[in-house]
Amino acid sequence: MQKGNIRVQTENIFPIIKKFLYSEHDIFLRELVSNAVDATQKLKTLSSIGEAKGELGELRIDVKLNAGDKTLTISDKGVGMTAEEVDKYLNQVAFSGAEEFLEKYKGQNESTIIGHFGLGFYSSFMVSDKVEVITKSYQQDKPSVKWECDGSPAFTLEETDKPDRGTDIVLHINEESKEFLEAGKIRQILEKFCRFLPIPIFFEDKQINNTTPAWTKKPSDLTTEDYQNFYKELYPFNETPLFWIHLNVDYPFNLTGILYFPKIKQSYEIQKDKIQLYSNQVFVTEEVKDIVPEFLMLLQGVIDSPDIPLNVSRSYLQGDPNVRKINNHITKKVADKLEEIFNKDRKAFEEKWEHVGLFVKYGMMTDDKFFERANSFHLFEDVEDGKFYTLEEYRTTTEALQKNKEGKLVILYTTNPVQQDAYIQQAKAKGYKVVKMETLVDAAFISQVETKWENVHFTRVDADIADNLVDKQEAGETVLNKEEADALKDLFNVQRPEINMSVEVKGLGAEAPPVVATRPEFMRRMKDMALAGGPMAGFYTNMPDEVTLTVNGNHPVFQTILQEADEIKKEKAIHNLADLALLSQGLLKGNNLTDFINRSVELMGGTQKSKIILES
Image (cartoon, rainbow, N blue to C red; front, side, top):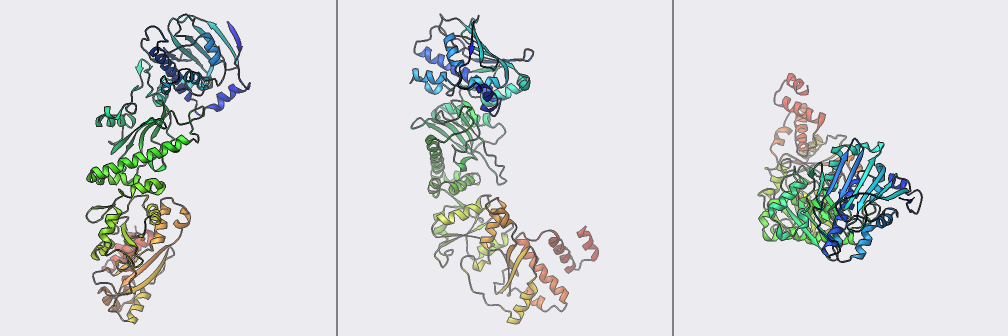
């Protein structure tokens, strides 16, 4: 029997490994199973070049739990180790056997070797009082050996009896980690980290992994059904995705994967971190923000790359030129796919716009290269007939009517077609085209693209009276004389603490409403962005609303009101008209809304009893 001390650079290495090397202790199982996969892949490589003799047999990895003995065993039928290799690989911390193997057999399936760090094995001491390694090399003339260590630098190494090639790692689980003696916990970890490893993994006599997931195959070998079935394997409760992109790059970096565009409703049940990062089919993380562009974090699927640099725990990305290259490649592939669908089947693209539009707008806001590409397939939807326009198509259709004195195209939009219907109808009466801008990102999107699109300005359809939506017009002729107009202005000038309200009397068409409430485009847009959590959210959210009440002096209702002898009734009628206008902007709430309802009942001849019922 050989005894000795593990050769480390510092005598405190094991406490560091136990407490700080891995933030999540369940990663130990990923590391040990990954090492077992490496050992099996090494054997395959050696066999393929004639260095490993004899039959390989069934190559599999078994994870066995014995709660009574408090042990967890990971067994493989891979390359195994000699006594010299055990001494070399286990007794010298941070010497990576996989790294040495790759160098020796360069060009022979390097991509199938997972371990590159040399510390994965020692994660076993995070959960164990003692670790035993029982191993037999593929070299037939070498005896099997047993290595044992209790977590201190001291170890023993001796010959033992092991009839079959491969390695058994036996963990004697410590008291603090007894959760790893529960079958459900072990199964959960295996299904999370090892579900797509390339060697069959068995636990409780059941295989827990798919060794050939869709992203490892050639796109030409996959059908639509294959892609959809793999999506269901990843996200069993989700709807069928809109479409997908199969990544398959081997130069200047290695990258495979499948990215799916999920269906996202207007209610936006958005969940980020749904793209899984793998390294040679070993699950690493769902935190991929440095690899995948920010605007594509809403996608789902898998990316797999051995070229992404990771730290020893494989849990965090580190800065590297390859990461930026991969990021740019994914952006280009997504733009290519969207442009392809738009050009080949525009109708299908338009049908998907409700879901795809969010990705496109978010990308145009956050990625300049994508912005340039997306200009050709970003769409506006007409609120009236559902027709879709690109920016240039909208410009061509509306230029005659919707170009202002500054030469800018004015894009009229609605954020709520139902609530803003009266304003939409007034705009339509003047021949204007109004488009939908209903998503959560639209307020920020509008502000950004105004700075990028030349001579384009956005105006919400309720930002002003219809006469002023494109260009400010002088007040039209009104049937009221100056005295009557001033009297109306005074009657409407009822201030509220939560609203900065100004009143103007203009001569609008007789078909226009008696009073129109509008909010300046800039302030309302800032408030919309604040509600979506934009910059200076608190500042704009707490600011009073700026509202202009435009009184249509040509509306016949004012002839009746001005002739009303009962001043109280006159004031209530005016108050109701103002409240109706505020209601159309969603600015009549709480007590003010209750007062409006009660006042309306009174004006219709309702009783005091009706008022009490309404208030209760």
